[in-house]
Length: 114
Length: 109
Image (cartoon, rainbow over all chains, first blue to last red; front, top):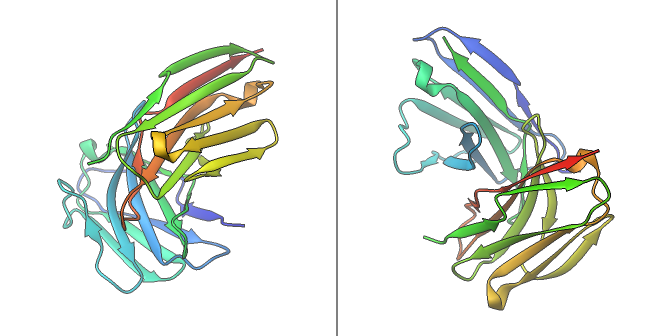
């Protein structure tokens, strides 16, 4: 149980375009979903927290107009990287939690902006 | 905010060896999780262990909340144990996980 999926697993896009990443909890309802970013050989950095039906809460320094988060249902959250630039290239990981504080992570999405 | 320190940063073992990874945290926590990030980037939940001891096969973990540390034990290591092990905590009423920098484990055949 507690499986979280992400789609796509990797994506290459041109500078200036937008990319949408989906995060789904497959076998449980996630009251809260989280989006992280991870640079090579570094730890995970929390970008934002989202609750179903509410606006996301962004961490300090994360541009909310650039990283749009929508938590449409208890099983789906999306992250849209708008007007992507090469510096947005990274590994993006989502996680989901139910009523407990334990978080379950998706497999990640590797974004490359050319 | 809370600080999470993991040690050692790197660990190289021969297959079959045992190891202990440590996680120190600077304040009281209400959640502590251990993860294994495999070479493809997937984080795998190992333990949800805010206190006490748990075992799962060759892995076990102990958290001593009053002394602000947790230990992850890996016995009879295998090459598939290679990867980065992260400790992460939450505190207060927050659900936000604060991660340590990880321990990179390499198990050689």
